[in-house]
Length: 358
Image 1: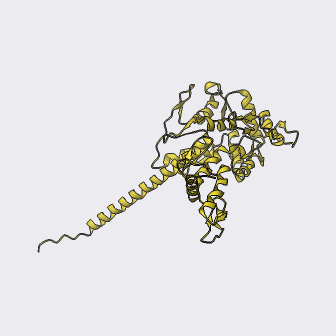
Image 2: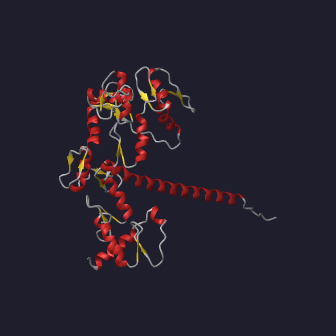
Image 3: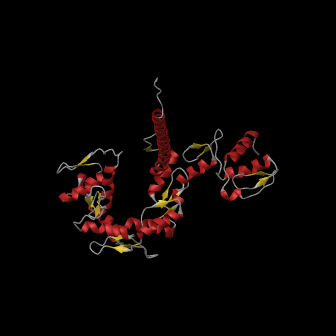
């Protein structure tokens, strides 16, 4: 049994929890008290509290001072819906993983959409690079030619890549603010606003790039060793020399193959030292361990919060983006209102008739 305070907290948790879409279709009589976690009905609050205890034992309810508390990282949340959303961050190891690359998502439909990228439909006859869409294939062909097929509609400036045209188009926007060119070429002293653009530029000098980075001749990505470059180039050529002997799938590196084989064997070699959970990849274990240690190495640049993984940080940053967008919209509406008021005042002044004595 549990005391009156336990009953009170459980009932508060039930009121805070928003019923799922499935539960909203359940019709229960007025004298029946409904469980908002599963939709079951009960004749008394005590009976409901006993039932809610079952949800608590399944870790579906965790609270502290009328809040839901994550048992892994100690993070407290006000509502059950927020608590469930937070728990998803700790469950990435149970989510959907691409067996071709290291892509992970918590939604199956996202994985299906992602895996289409690995389907080779268009292959370059010159370098063997593969592409999913005809647009990507056509744009890629420009790297093998001196032609610049993308032209600015305003000033007619030509560009070899569509992305270059997009960046250039920003120059014609009235509110455009030029970025700081912090990255400079050590050979010709040209400066660039983005490191990636600098690395592409370095190819014109036949140089590996700063800090001995090896640069991909197809996309301009820089890697730290020739071995990594060889593996990376296979993403463009479609070459997959490492083949699974159980299902026949091919992979660009032995490491990807080793991780894939665990889907057949069920092997999870990386064990948490604080609990009984095991993981197929070490990176997933590292994020999980931070839930126990409280380590949060990813700070938010907009507020004082910090997070255990980059995924959590990116999810949090979206809240700032929405807030900034809302504030910008309100500011624009205020400016528009002020502008309309100024026009009305000017119009009213124009209609004033000055009566002169006869």
